[in-house]
Amino acid sequence: MADPLSIAASIAGLLSLTHDILSALINYSENVGAYRKEFMKITEEVRGLSAVLHALRLVIERMEQGGFSMPSVRNGLNLCLCDIDG
Image 1 (cartoon, rainbow, N blue to C red):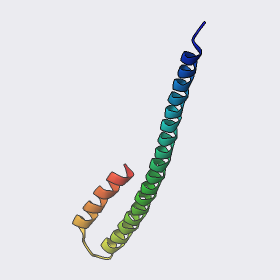
Image 2: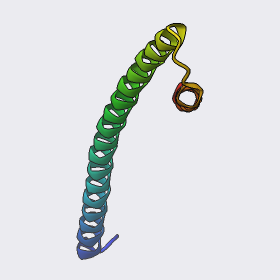
Image 3: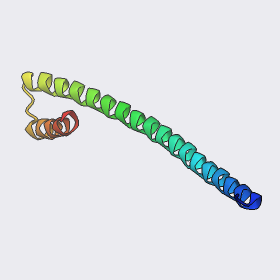
Image 4: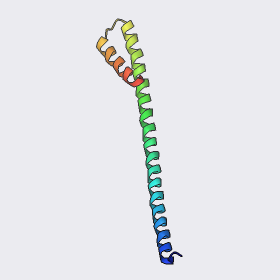
């Protein structure tokens, strides 16, 4: 038969291990939630930037139709849009 003190010590060790594992899981889930929020925030900012750049491209196209030539601005804008839009 096992010694009662050994059984109690084993149970205490398992409880301590369980506590450590639960603490690590809680910490991990909190960090994942924070990263997810930050990722969503950055995604919205990039979408906003993309909308502004697309609007700017329309303005440049209209200006070029009116006789203004802006090839370097147009090329730079197109490069930005390619990077953002994929």
